Image (cartoon, rainbow, N blue to C red; front, side, top):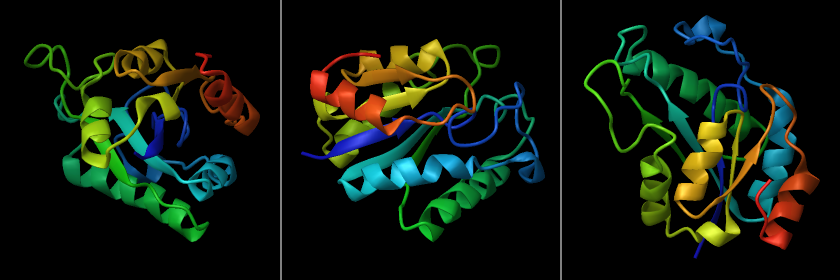
Amino acid sequence: MNKAIFLDRDGVLNHEIYDYICRVEDFKVLDYQIPVLKQLFDEGFLLIVITNQGGIALKRYTVEQLDEMHQLLKDAFVAEGADIAKFYYCPHHPTVGGECKCRKPASGMILDAIDLFNIDPKQSIMIGDKPRDVEAANGAGVKGILIEPDEQIDYNKIKAALANNSYV
């Protein structure tokens, strides 16, 4: 089985602006996150992005614009010798069409990734900057780590959580 680092996007991998990032030029990669995640990638962890993108349902931006932002993120990682295995995003918004199974705090995107990549949830972590990220992780049997928006990911905290089989 594989192991994974599931990553929320806004506030974890790119600068949090506390609103929808609607324009590619407003998308700022947090380059300081890459070395820690590369180290985990080198240790055999898959890097998988799990992100709510309700701005699509609200017509604030398009799937093409979202794909362009994700390509910038992927390129930044590849340039440093790491790779993001897949980007999962929920395009839904609760005010447009009701609830879905993928929007965090639901665990649908994580469960889909677990199935597709044959991931062992017990050897995996989800890093997010909102309680809903941890809730989605826990619902899929994955440990969740909560960080502050734009806070640097702590390698030792991740390794300790994995070693102790604890939730942070």
